[in-house]
Length: 226
View 1 (cartoon, rainbow, N blue to C red):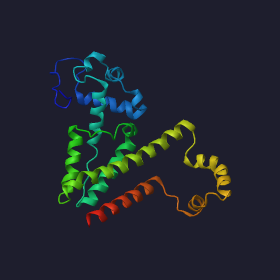
View 2: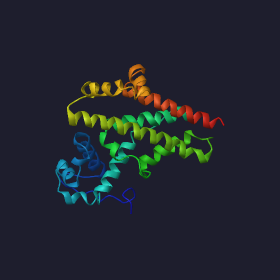
View 3: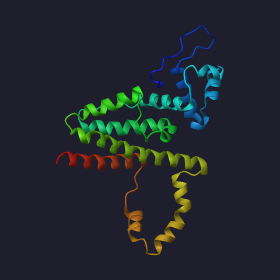
View 4: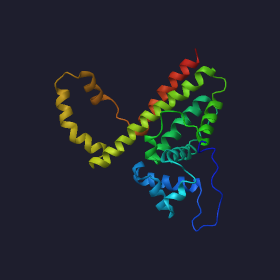
């Protein structure tokens, strides 16, 4: 039986009562602080001041715990809007913000669809807003937006992690590599790249994300008008 449907053990009078919600909340706090490497049933039990064996009545494996953590964060992703474009924009923005709050989420999203209750509710909210769109296009549209967001946020999280690992933020990294890049551009063999580096507007992460999203939504709108 899947963890979503498996009953929790009955409550009993003990010094430290448990529930799946408390276990998941503790696991998320550990992951937010120190990444997924900090999450194990033993460490979660220690944070809750209970023995590890008590957790097995609620969660059978670490994979189940990760599924529950992921679904708990999906509760933070509730797209809103008055039309498909607003809802898909909200989906993208709220997903990105959830990943930026919970950096470890970048390592779990993607792949097979999530089927927890909050993930399903998110899917229902988005697909309801696409009422009137060809049923064969609805899921590909959502998948296109999800794929864009996943790629964008993984790049942002990779930058955060590189900054921590090297001690250099983006500007310091650019300054350190700048002379090398300039020597390459001065060869004249990279004229298109040189033009972009020299003349293009350099956007912030927020601006880059929103511009890319606009380009995607414009493409979707053009397709829907056919």
